[in-house]
Length: 340
Image 1 (cartoon, helix red, strand yellow):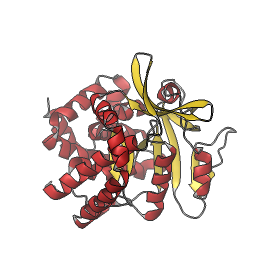
Image 2: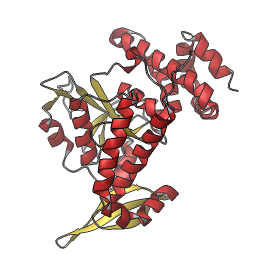
Image 3: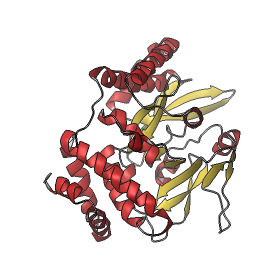
């Protein structure tokens, strides 16, 4: 397959947009950055006073890039409006260069979720919405059939991370979703809702979390204030997620899995869904995995090899799922085997 690449101008504009949105997150701080260590990990919080109460809002996990931004917090705050206008120009450039956007309904929903803190607090977009956002990460153009937008928005997070952060979304997600005419989807078993459907359209929002137990039941995500469906194998996709922009208005910063982990996880998911009502989704999973693996084998072979070996080393059930999907994708199997 010959890939159509985005131009160097588009590549530079995309990276500038990511940097500016990350700067914006620090420029929005209300108080003083405070470092907190929990269970051997170090996190940064925005500490500010409301009346006599001191509150803390989670900023991010400690790292060199975050510390550098925190040292420039006053400067970033001063130039927020100027940077907002610059981001709008960058998005116009990306659109002119043929970058995909999102429809207004999806863009406004993602902006509201980001504003409430969903992605800041560990929420990670998975599924086709994440696949579409790899266009900028990998610098390739998608064909029309690859760019087809799904009506499902899947957001996943680790239950333990959600507890460790000691912060919650604001305003509550139930209110945010109801503002967009979403209602909980009834389930056969009584209990909290983990799926929300928009009453005026066909958009479905689902909350997911990795399962580390035999049963895949519902788990609470404390930071997001919702319950989520636990799924086996999902922890592989959520390790070390990345921040990317959605090209809506002046940009929305969201979080998605690393592309190599997304691709390998899709092979596993495809085998889980090969029979029954989700068989068409299984076909889409395989196509997305094959497309990404072909690009990554050329552009990022070391990253792809590491993800592939990590998944296969996770256990026999993992290898069985991978081998079953790759039996239907002989060319993809050859590409993966050629990496070693």
